[in-house]
Length: 133
Image (cartoon, rainbow, N blue to C red; front, side, top):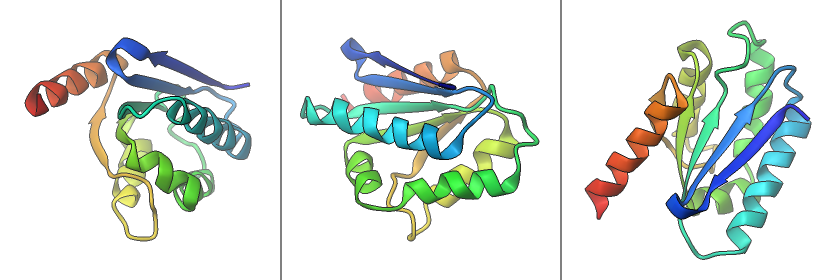
């Protein structure tokens, strides 16, 4: 399956990496199921890094729209209530997702940060945590 799900429990961070060839429906359902299971096991708030840096920048626009469809619905809203979202990837892919996440028709949380690499995203999380501590 072209999706990895890594949990840094001590820091309350989840890194979800999408790997080509992407299978939008399968990957998004798996991602939401894994997040729902994790959040059901705890009352903690998590920072979630969605890493799409390994996907082709020429990913069809229709695939992006299809993925955005998973930001709607009860499960997406429940996940969004308990997570802070960061995106990692090329601007052509992450910018439309970040812009859409703040729109009213998507229940998912707004993207708080866009990074080029996982280490940059982790550093951003640590700065966000320090600012709210």
